[in-house]
Image (tube, rainbow, N blue to C red; front, side, top):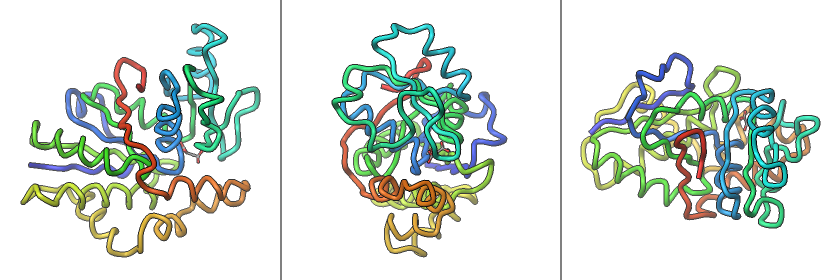
Length: 239
Ligand code: MLT
């Protein structure tokens, strides 16, 4: 059995991913936000690669049922109903709605993973359920691809750490796994921090969020196993 980690989606082509089991991680904050929105009753989340694409996709949908959401430099995009905060995705706001989401790194990574089957959305928020689902995928197919969104086309500590935690959790009970170099590095990272919150403290994304007065989001994203849902991205929709 084999696990490949990619620290950014750069360099991956649809052909590399077609039909393979994939987990996408952008734990600060896009994948945490998607999981929270769906766990709180959103009908679906449509990830957009750009804010312009989000506006275009939303304009084709029933106005009353859609919410535009997204950020640039952590801050809500002007004219959008919501930012990219999981704390905004309350049942009162999102229940029954389609959310079209455009973020800097996370939603482009999801769009890049299209073609995978399944494409699972992961974060600490659904970590236990994600591990069970990903283990099943590994057992059925013999391989799994973990794609980190990264940050501005570079490695992001919070996603690399999350990838390592997932590799570590999957190794338990599955015996010997073949890992690519990034998976070995991610696994080694898990020993360098004392849990999710500690790993996030050193991350540039967490600093940017704190500077934007969004420190509460970092704390929310660092708390594991809030939800038992593992969203899946297929045919342009996450449900
Ligand atoms: C992203 O997609 O780059 C992030 O989720 C940024 C953020 O809103 O914190």
